[in-house]
Image (cartoon, rainbow, N blue to C red):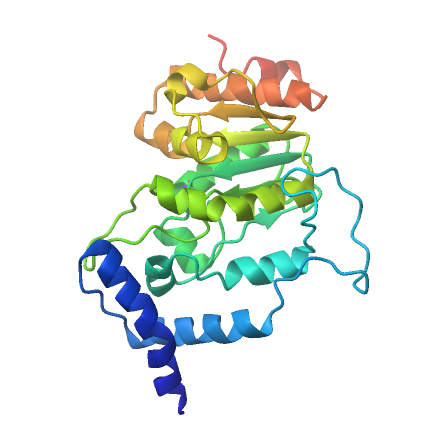
Length: 272
Ligand code: URA
């Protein structure tokens, strides 16, 4: 079979499933067909293996998800970036956005899902909200390289053809993708997680109280303290100092929890 026929053969079952599940007739571009064929090829050749006795021993980590499931970073990244669990996102995505930063970070930031900019670049938080996140990190005397940044959903939620903008991930999409984030957290073993916005809190903790009520109060993810706070995109929409101050107070609480030095200037950033 030539490569185009292989792409069609790999894609047709996915399109049929989308048609049956959504009741609409999806179409795939030649580029999407190529990506599906590549994913199908890679996921066959990549072993989504757990570490076997023959493989190099992983660093010991306390079990967070399945205590028997110990991935290497390499195997996990391969599995995530070739994932085909959401067929509709396989055909719409440009990149799977795995996550960036230190793989032994004390601090992990969790967002909801890649937007158009992140999908184009393959990196989380690179658009306007990402710029604001980088500024918040800088105010904490941190860089993106000091922390790990990931999303609950690793693929951009698809949009109807011809529309721009982003949509929130659906609960079923987050539930499907969550095991990847859990494995990342398992490997990192952070001391603190910051959940950015209501959707991230919902996806990670299945907690649906409003973010305005949750933020500033420690939650728990399998014995790892989680600080819920507003999503940077919310701060971009609502530029009031009082909302910025709330996020900064949440970050000061995170810094305290991590025993980071806090200067008087940092404490007074948003004081009147
Ligand atoms: N918003 C998110 O939640 N995640 C990103 O990566 C970008 C924007």
